[in-house]
Length: 66
Image (tube, rainbow, N blue to C red):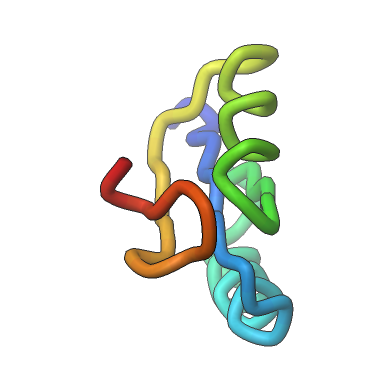
């Protein structure tokens, strides 16, 4: 199995870290990245392709739906 790149986006640092910690338990086949807002997420996506994006629905500025 190839490595899957997962990006988690949430403005609440506690939730962000909790989800990151849970996904890391999936093992070495998952590379986990985090971003605290959609601007940081877009910057990350422009630098490196992402296989899975988990995002908060309601965030200030640009929401997960945007």
